[in-house]
Image (cartoon, rainbow, N blue to C red; front, side, top):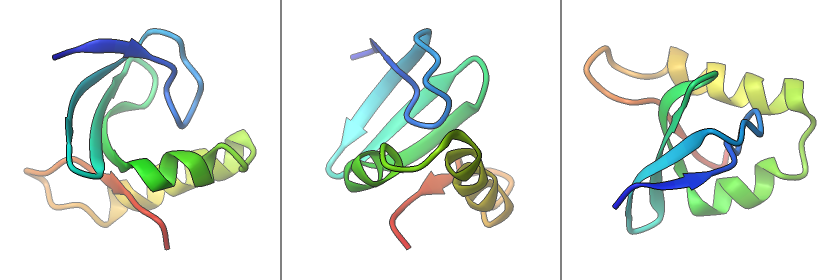
Length: 75
């Protein structure tokens, strides 16, 4: 089931939650793109400023195989 959410990284209100499986949610944001994020990381990221949240996404992208979505998880 797809539903509208605020992007946990950039705050864009047009992001969509594509699916939720266990502790992982798949977000589709027009600014950040598609990525996975753990529910616990959503809480942690809410305490970070925008540059720090974007850095976490970029780190996840750099550590992701070509055929997979980036996963933001707690360090």
